[in-house]
Length: 129
Image 1 (cartoon, rainbow, N blue to C red):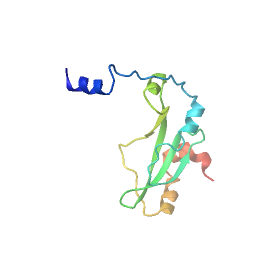
Image 2 (image 1 turned 135 degrees about the horizontal axis):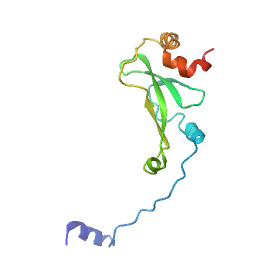
Image 3 (image 1 turned 90 degrees about the vertical axis):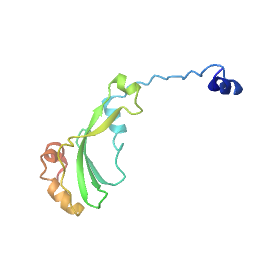
Image 4 (image 1 turned 60 degrees about the vertical axis):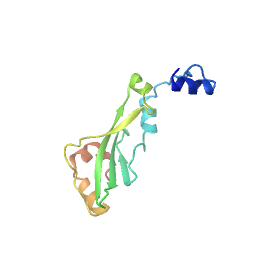
């Protein structure tokens, strides 16, 4: 008899316990957008701006060395099969990590330049006053 079998017997366990799996219904797209609104934001986040439909966000944060930078993220929705294996119905994914975003010394300078970013104009032009 193996060590684990003896340990299990001492505790009174003769067979492994079965895990109860509760099926969850996949939320609607609108429910997912609302639920995921502030999920996954880094602790250094200074501001977050959302597109009209809430599926794209611009996260402004302070880098570890003290500079201010930003990143655009798109909400990636899971299908029913993926949702079965995930605690969340979606995840935020950066647009592109292939190129680096500029860094600024102040939030004010970043906001001035962000208004000229093509991605910002595409998704947030309705938010610009």
